[in-house]
Length: 151
Image: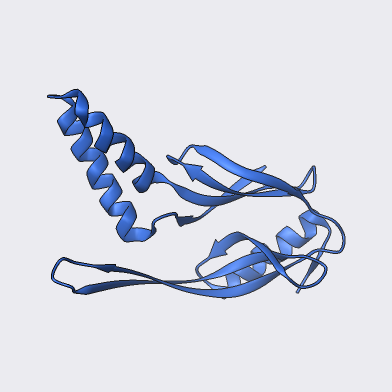
């Protein structure tokens, strides 16, 4: 089994804010029990992410949300011969606004390996790569592991 991390659940700005809140909770915890509240909230927002776990031996894949960065919540999907994998270019822009109403945009461009069903409908993202060449290499490897076609 292999796990691929995909994205932070609250984006890069939310993750940074969560880690800052987590650190503040640790600092407050030394003087008061109420530091547990920002500690838990900061850990949830700062460390939660999405991932995909593949199990080629059992021919199944699981897309999951990693709560607090360690608790996977998701459902296994069996891969059959009618499914196929492909590459999709992803361009996500995370936006945040400051109190002065200034907008901060963080663009994230990458290539995703995606699992499709028999009707060519996207089921889930499996893996992400920075370059197209690396994505093509991983696509062929993944298709060979599961014995399905690559588009």
